[in-house]
Length: 407
Image (cartoon, rainbow, N blue to C red; front, side, top):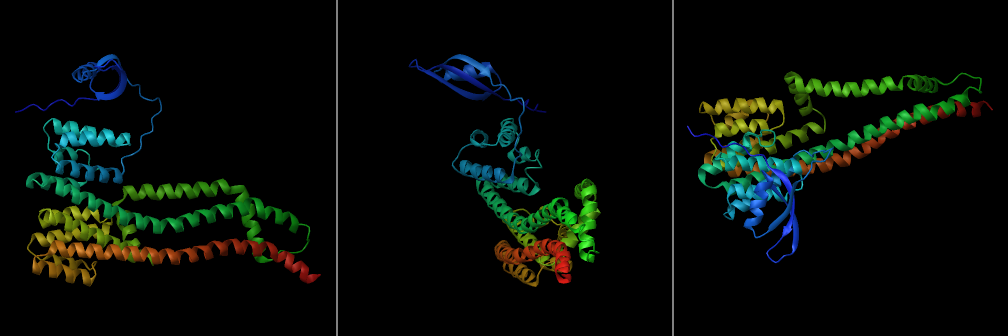
């Protein structure tokens, strides 16, 4: 049995020396040792005078590897492999030119795995956080068929489209969340600083305060004393809900099911899921991945537990010989237009093309829905924030109006 090569740890070295014309030059190289750097420089006609390992900073905050980093690296890798450059050399060049140190380390580790004799798909599987099952499956299909550059190009396009949909959904949810946060801050400022000034003014009136004013003043007095408890419960509640959500599959399923039924947001979420489902399945089916295997990867890409479980049911039905359209119809989660186009694709043998058309249609639907939702949410949130602040302002001026009427 062949013994696997030991993984060599690379370090950053700074060097100074003279070239073959006697000029002073300096630079940096990544290598396993200083001796390796000196040997490499001599082969290039450089006489090294000083080679030292660069010290690591005392406090180093690494940026995480983002999806856009992986997408960019994938497209670059596809281009370089298509130009005839070996995989390991391509990975080295991409890593050297990347700005994110975390991405550099990731690509360097993958390059070392490839240089030791491991296939690219197997090397990527060691990093499931950055490269999911769908990504590694497509790379493996590309290696087997000899079309790795083409498949990597498809992966890059796929990830760009999916991230674009996610970005649109996040932008639609960000505005109401920001307004709600502003509302909490404004209310807190009014209760702590503004209303107490009016309260001291009301004490000189000697009369009974209106009910609304009394409620707001009582709320202000309570908030001034227990504001820390309010924010502690608020922050603790949010953190607790997120922690419970991560640990409880049942809660995750319930939240995802409720999200699909939300007014305004539910249809938007459903359209984005159908777009992701169609594009993912089209990409994998077009790469030659069997439909049953492709559906397993597609289930993870939906981003919703309700659809994930349903797609797994579809996979089980398809594995028994049932058509994809009939299995999808049984779930009751897909629009009739989608089912009709799937049926047409299966009958004509153009399933990949039909799935891509479905994805493009629903991606445009998501764009339109986000634009409509943004124009609708803005006035609703303004009315919401104005109603809260206005109620407090009216409550503070009611005693003044009452006193003026008596006079």
